[in-house]
Image 1 (cartoon, rainbow, N blue to C red):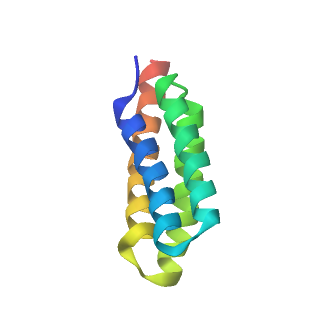
Image 2 (cartoon, helix red, strand yellow):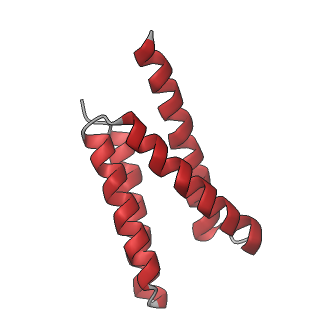
Length: 99
């Protein structure tokens, strides 16, 4: 069964990368957003919990560091919080699957 929360998370990450490119001309934002968003979407579609945990932990760490350095809530703080939520959800799903 497809993980719709994970798909929404992946779509949001892709959209964020596209917005970063359109507003600031940031090619790294576009590339990172598309790669991470597509990986998250693939992980959600195939129920690959390990992939979702990996993407959300990397994004949570990177964007958390950016938020601490800049203090800006958008986009770093929001992506960090969403990544932590998705990571926590993935841990809960992994524990439930093992029981």
